Amino acid sequence: MNKDLMRQLADARGVSGQEDEAREVILAAIDGLVEDIRVDALGNVLARKPGAAGADLPRVLVSAHMDEIGFMLRSIDGDGLLRVYPVGGVDARILPGLRVDVGPAGVPGVLMWKPIHLGREQKTVALDNLRIDIGASDRAGAAAHVKPGDMITFPSEFRAIGEGAVRGKALDNRAGCALLVELLQGEPLPCDVLVAFTTQEEIGLRGAQVVVESLQPDMAIVLESTPAHDLPDLTADPDDGIAFNPATRQGAGPVLTVMDSRTIVDPRLLNWLRATAEAQGIPFQLKSSRGGGNDAGAIHVAGSGVPTAAISMPARYVHGPAALLRVSDFDQSLALLRAALNAVSPTLLAHD
Image 1 (cartoon, rainbow, N blue to C red):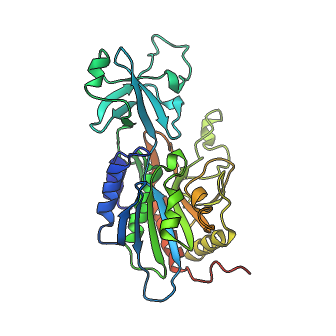
Image 2: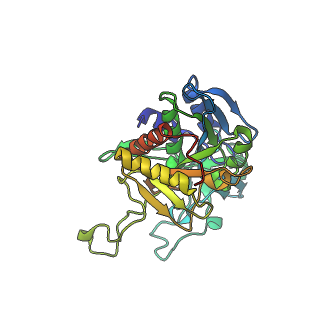
Image 3: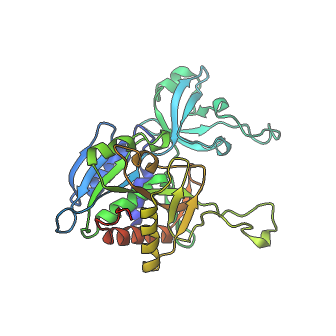
């Protein structure tokens, strides 16, 4: 993992629909590594890394979404407090008291809450009832610094922590973006890599819906971060630690999706990724759930259909202000991605 690149990506602001800062970091990072760089009408970054010499090389789309969850400023109350809409899957349980940055200038604010001295009975606060306090005393004072429509993010606190982990804002899915950049920094592969850093995934996979028509891939691989379910059962004996068999665990390697709420992964691609991991001695995990989803849900049904798989990195605390990712899971995901693309062939998608 290139931690400097990861820091730049995590620190960049880029709520769905306003991914400008993240896009600028990505454009700078891929300059000189790819051809045909362009930004489409939805703000997706598209490009191509030509394959090693040869005719009729497979065209493999590799994508990662660059947007993050956050809020949009809805209105300003008379007392100067800000009302907001969520943008993406924001978890109201964790919000009271958190710090936020408002608008392009990053005006500092705090999601209001009632301190325990005044509200021991207080339970989870509905998002509609939360306000952001930027220190203004009235509407005019707040309006001098922010305006309705401003996007709101959590402040970044990217850093290396513990034993081989990093913590940061928006690792869902700037970690996937970093993975794609590092792939592009490698040698040419026996395929044309069609590159898509997509927008608005968190609000309905919108950017991904248009990239297939532009790039015309033969197949696709989506790079993602996925929730790690390896937190301990806090009701169990503390000496037991994790008291169940989690679906995805940190430190156990990349996660290969079998199915989710939007996609059943093409079995040819799933078998190819599994066989590659086993041949290379790369640990991996399988994920099959009725919830969640990623850009594969839009890509695999675009056009006349695109066989699609997903490689994800297990991360704790996603969709919050500070996700946690193991460096080993990132490195093993990159190793699997490179090994798989080095093994791709025109016969991969042949039906028996």
